[in-house]
Length: 112
Image (tube, rainbow, N blue to C red; front, side):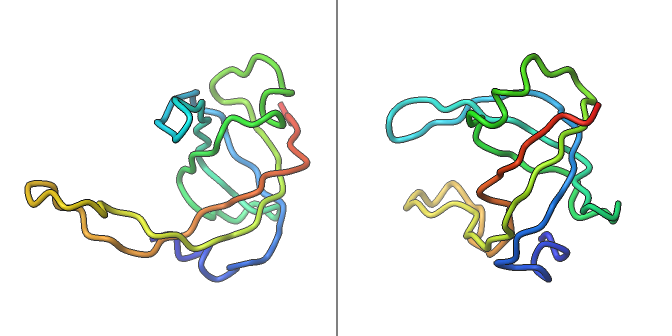
């Protein structure tokens, strides 16, 4: 669980993270591109979480060709969400639990 994000639930703040790679995930309308950031820190440099996945939105696309290790700054809001397997298959066991994420990334810019 991301306890630091839980402490700031529903508050908007500025964060930085290092670009790792792009990915894909399944969505209702087909596959969606995603972006993985690691070493997420708040604006004062305090560690918040080790990694977060975001949808690869126009804001991230506007940064151009990213290389591993590029530092990205953005504003985001901490939100709670349920994670785990919610289906009916008995052979799949991932208990459902609450966790925290950063959503609605805006003011996205490349620092280095």
